[in-house]
Length: 191
Ligand code: ITT
Image 1 (spheres, protein in one colour):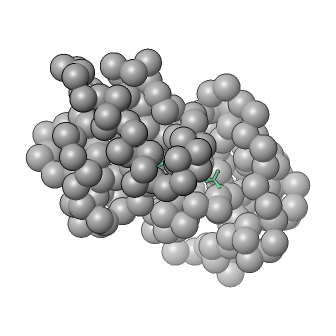
Image 2 (cartoon, protein in one colour; image 1 turned 90 degrees about the vertical axis):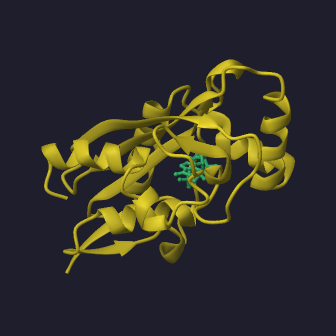
């Protein structure tokens, strides 16, 4: 069976990417190979996803796929953006990071936000393709739902009333930023 390394240590992301990939692959995690995360020194989602794919690809002789993603809230200058994971680390949990963001948003009229995912696929010949997927929505007034992962409980995708944290996992996974990025990637490579 062909192998692919899903270059992430985030379990929520790993699960979503594994489902979006073809059944022909055996999905390998960096953790199972004892490979640590690279330092995310990029200034954009795109550069960080390329950096991750380049890094992980050095350890294996089969394809790699990496994701750099995050939540961007318009009224607070698109924060936390590329620092989404680091914000949760700073506050000790996603719950606390969400509480912090909701407090910052308290008097904001504009609650528009988007989730973004930059995906990089690097084949075994080390040729890479990068794409971006984005989903627009709004920030809820409260933390709602316990499904999904990360910032799912405060993000309401446009034309829905529930947060990603309230939607069944299979539904979220069929509309989210990662799904949109994958749709673009699948137009360019059989994956
Ligand atoms: P890797 O670098 O190992 O992939 P990470 O969690 O550090 O893991 P990122 O640097 O890409 O990943 O950070 C993305 C952050 O945005 C992280 O905190 C996620 O939980 C959050 N995030 C990304 N996609 C999300 C989604 O679909 N739902 C909820 N939160 C999401």
